[in-house]
Image (cartoon, rainbow, N blue to C red; front, side, top):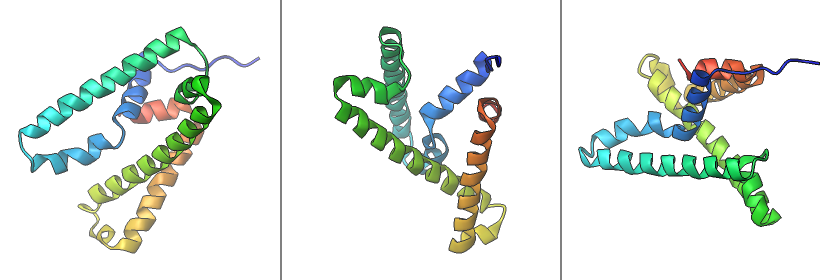
Length: 149
């Protein structure tokens, strides 16, 4: 029998925070800087929304502890809702992963000007997405180490 592998509180918090913030934390600051002080209110509203969602999912997990997260909770209402939630969650994840790859290439293009051309930028974006895919395949411990850097 194999032992259960665990990650610590700090690593778990890093993974959850990274999932909640998503790619927006890397994409938005440069765009919002041109708007000025009103952007702070956008961050405040976003934080309130994220914390509200975290609270709702925490309550759902204590009232109905089952595997599957949002898909399982929506499936309690109707299997069609569960399926639709799964499809939308899948699409949101791959779109978010592409956004992270594009953002990384955008930041790297400052140091590597060749990435300003579409073909090398596309290849670099694909390479970054695959790099993170392989890191995910190594397991939760590797992912938690990466998110807490």
